[in-house]
Length: 328
Ligand code: ACO
Image (cartoon, helix red, strand yellow):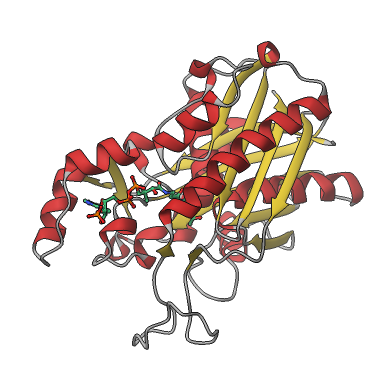
């Protein structure tokens, strides 16, 4: 592969909603849940929710994360000629979030577009940026995962609304040989996680007033796919790239459920379990933002060193999944 990460950034909405506060909020509508259920079944303790009145949108979070990544990379906006945003909750159907980011950063004229691969989106976007840096006249790219999942939650469905949070993460890529190997996989015939609209024949669309409804998920089926996709993809990728478990410094897995990460790492005994990073307790599932937020946290905490091999792995609606090995 052809590019390397020069810097990372992330941004979270100000408002933190703890499980206790969430349970009290749902109780007002007669929906029962508890801090204990959410913590023990998912590992989540709190999440951040965007406040539209405060101007917190998918684009504003994406812009804030991108600015931090540019600063960390010591790269000027004028050097950026490609912006790719992975999102499943864009502010508008069009223009894309990437267009908004381009305008806010003042990166006039550069290529900018969104990628929709739900929670695996950031890894798909990194692959696209890497291929474009290799093939085209591009010098540097910003790749972002940004979501306001709170906008698409059904607060009467306790089996989904407690799982998600909002946020954004970003990486600046430049030319180099940092992305070692990747594997993308899509299983497009499985509608176990959807956000239906009135325009398809989805059995989940229930004549709701809005054109777009909310997250519908078969949790058990998603769980099975998630564990399989995460563990098989990482093992296959390591085998094809000739990377041994002891060579891996950290694994940055998508944060959907602590139990999924736990089961996946049990199935990859070659990598020491403590190398799997976790922050789901504070953010919940931020979909395409989850991998870059965690990557940025680990980077800023000084846990990633030059030359380290890092594995990114994610899965989500589609069903789609991806894994990637990066040399820092
Ligand atoms: N509070 C209290 N009880 C609840 C809640 C809640 N928030 N949600 C469900 N329950 C109840 C159920 O009604 C059920 O009760 P019953 O036995 O009386 O019917 C009981 O808890 C057990 O429900 P299960 O669905 O069996 O719970 P499980 O242990 O499987 O956990 C979960 C559910 C957390 C959704 C799990 O299946 C999971 O994590 N699945 C994967 C989700 C995922 O990875 N999503 C990522 C993709 S998202 C994307 O791509 C956008």
